[in-house]
Structure formats: C-alpha cells, structure tokens
Length: 312
Image (cartoon, rainbow, N blue to C red; front, side, top):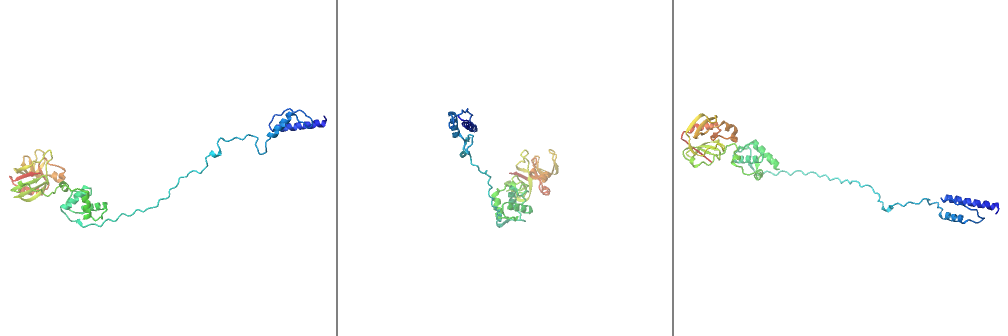
C-alpha cells in the first residue's frame, strides 16, 4: 500500500472517531483498512451514527411528559366580586290621617254632677285622671280629656263629645261606688225603714254617710268613717245615752270632741285623723265625722234618747 493510501485511511478513521464522540458514543478502536474499504466495526458505528444523529430542531435530551394534561387544568377566571344591591327607592312616609270631626258635646267645662264624676272615674281607671273624682268639670278634667283624645287620634278639644265618650266607654268598666267616691261625698243610701219615724241618726255603711232625719225627712248629711275588721262598728238600732262635748278616750288616750255615745264605748264624734287622712285610716269602732262644723251643729240638735240606726 502506498503512503498516500495509508494517509487517507488514517484521515478517514479520525473523522469517524470525531463523529462518534459528538454523538456521545464511546470511541472504538479503528483498524486501518484498505482504500475504499471499511472494517465491520467502523461500518456499524457509522450506520448507527447516521441513524441516531439529532436533527437541528430536536433536543438531545428526552422530553418529560406532564402527569396532568392541559385539558385537566382548571380554566383561569376572575374572582367573584360581591354584587352591590341596587339602591332602594326612597319612599316618603304618608302623613297621618286627619282626626275625625268631633260629635255633639256631652260634657264640658263648668258642668258638674254625677255624669262628670263618672267621666273622671273612668279616666282614672286608665291613668288619665290623677285625682279623686269631684264631680266638677274644671281645667284638670279638661286637660285629662284632651290627653286621652290626642292618644286615640281624636281632635284635642278638652270637651267630651260623643266620639270621645263612646271610646272611653269601650275601654273602661262601670265605676263602683268606692271609685266614684273614694274620698267620700256619696249621696246618702236609701234609708233603713227604722229611720223613717222619729228623730234618728241614720248611718249607712255602704254609702259611708250619716243622715240626721226627723220624721222621715233628711235634715243634713255628713261623711263618716267606721272601725276596721278587728274593731268593727256594731250594727243595729240603738239610742244616744250620753253626750260629751270635750271627751277624751281613756282607752286610747285620744280626743273625741262632740261625742254622742250609743253602744258601750262606741260613739259618733269628730276625728281630726279622718279630716287629715280621709279613708286611708279607720276608727276603733266609733263613727268618725270629719266635718267639724257639721258635727258641732248636729251635737246641738241631737238629744239624749234619740235613735241611732247603723246598717249596711
């Protein structure tokens, strides 16, 4: 073999070795072959290199497949923002209806009597009249009626018209005698038949009155107070057996002016406690009178031996 052929063979072998190193393969021993010939080893390496050489668009590293496909990924979306409710339309409050026209007037200022007393007692039941009924329609009663009317949507006049009266009747009950006369002033009850003859101190526990009667005719009437349930005033027909203008109780050590005794230690007499406290107190069994002038006048007229009738 000539030197040129040997040189060409070496050059070819070097080129094969360079290609093999570039492909990452291990360099193999190359035997020198004749011109135009390749050894089996060299030919196999060359074939492999030709089959596995990377293309310019391909990475020499293996591609990694994602464990989750793109189709499985959730679609990105904007976060939900709280929706703002539309503003409510402004509504104006309708004005209250006008009060109805009042009806005919039933009671008004300046009047007095039992009907006025009933009006006051009914107003007192529902807290509009803070005093004891007096039977006189004055400024206090008119103010109470006006307040009641305003609370019930009626025209505030202070006078009791038919609308006001009907509304008050529907809200209250019929007053009792004690509600009508909590501080006395009751008209005398129907007299007991024993009071219809002679000179009699006719005393009714129901009406809390003492009426001085002569032959069935009422001369004068005063408020009275009785004993408690522990010291009750005796009931029945008696006679005045002793009078004492300035008597003082030896049992209770209290004054008993204008005393007219009719049953043991029980007497009709004036009571300063009754005059001061009214029916918030009681006697020890006597019949108390709070009208000092009235009892003084009565003391002059009543005689020893006149009848005393105490009844329900």
